[in-house]
Image (cartoon, rainbow, N blue to C red; front, top):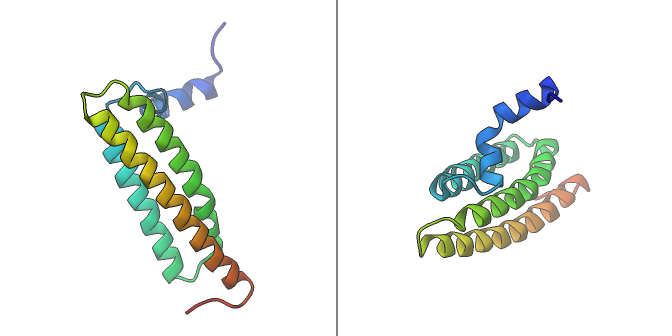
Length: 123
């Protein structure tokens, strides 16, 4: 039985990400590229949306952040199992701390955004 073309295309396009999520990618690449760089890019998008007064885009990004953070946490956790000591443990600890920090930050940003939606927005 052959795989549908759309599924084959998706797997081909997102093969590196799938390898990361299943723990078959290099920890350094997952941590630095998918973790640090992409997260910094998402944060930059949020800041730009904030400066542009785009509450709709800010809200969308506040929905994307926790999902992306969860995916990175899973990817780093799984990829760190194959890393040279002590880097796997270090990566896991940093990623858990990063995820907790992200959740707290998202909570405060959401509170600020709710104030904005209700017309009590800060300047």
